[in-house]
Image 1 (cartoon, rainbow, N blue to C red):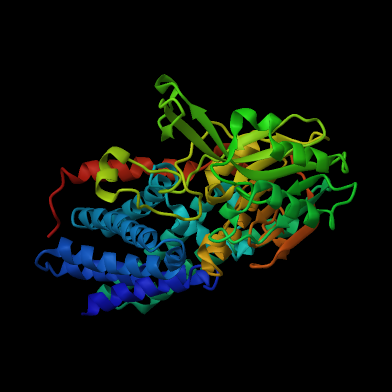
Image 2 (spheres, rainbow, N blue to C red; image 1 turned 135 degrees about the vertical axis):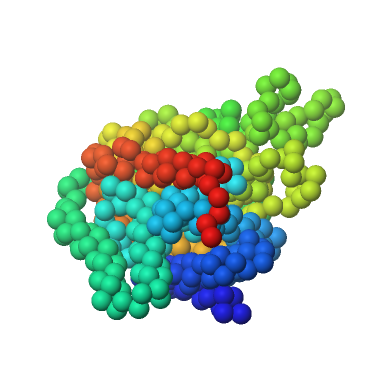
Length: 534
């Protein structure tokens, strides 16, 4: 019973430390109760220790996941339970690996293995088809950006490493104290742990106070139409949506405004717009008519495209069978969650979202899972079809040469992925999203604050247009300078600074996670040749 209570305690500490309501300092000792419970089962030679460790670890991580991401239920109940149960299982698997190593190696080496393996787990969650990095530990400081200005060097993996090292140190101090009852040693370890927490925060404050944005302004207007995706969005014509957007933007635009930014898939009538015919579409024609009033304006917005095929040889792996034509020949289509940029040059610039929401935008391992699950998967806020991606990130180029990265929704959660926009030349980032699927919950608030991490990592200002909010202007220090609250319709006008400098993290990406591969794999392989410790 004691070990179950320890696992419950860890789960609750991790959960109540999470943004946006939590205080992340709790994470620095959140794993300690679970580490202690794991130690109890191993050291006492309990029967079936692996099963008991699995049970307490799964309980801990289930509590952590359900409290922090329950809001997925507002989109789909099945999706929420799948995400919570599966992610808890993956975290538990990492913990079981740690328990295996602990039986064969010293505590110090086992803790080093846990730190390295957890970082690899988070790296996996950024890169595999079932990607769900929402609860990667480094994200926890999203509302305390004054603590982590050094993310421009490490990315969020620096935060993960920070949390895990501190937990390991505190657990080891507690373990040694119970064996020796040496208070002087315990106090020394506590002071060291305190220093490990305070020194990075102090360094962050130094970076914060010494960092100054170069004055290179661009005026932007962000649109927040506040369209209900369940009852309005897919039942309204693109023409009507465009009228609403342009009527609202006319109240804020000036001849000095450089960018007008509208949210993800704001134009999504029916199956979307034919990609091959976009240049001749009514959607582009209406936008071009509006742009004639503002010759210096660049219009960036989200749209759903499709591309039809009649030849099976032309199909892509993501192509969807959509029926037959009038002659009975089969038709296939690719669907895209895309962004476009239009201006007076009449040249269309298009980008297709490439980090897809698992389920409705991306169905991994279809040959295995579809017979089991059918069409029911996770809906975290995409549209309604399998989507096709593109290989490379791009930077849209405005009339005056300004380059902007069109980051679409879920993509903004991926630190290393977003660096590709900056490496492509982006001087600021435009995040377009639709967070209405989750309602007024922690979901949209967490998503907004994760964008602040991208600003710090790349030292790029961010203009964020969200369908129902929160739209925001974020500076290069990750501070929200202006915002338009959730559930409000309107526009947000502001000035942001462009930046051409490349940070260490932008250049080298998630190098910390890649470095963790060596010790994790080496220790794991050697463990097969080591007997269990008595």
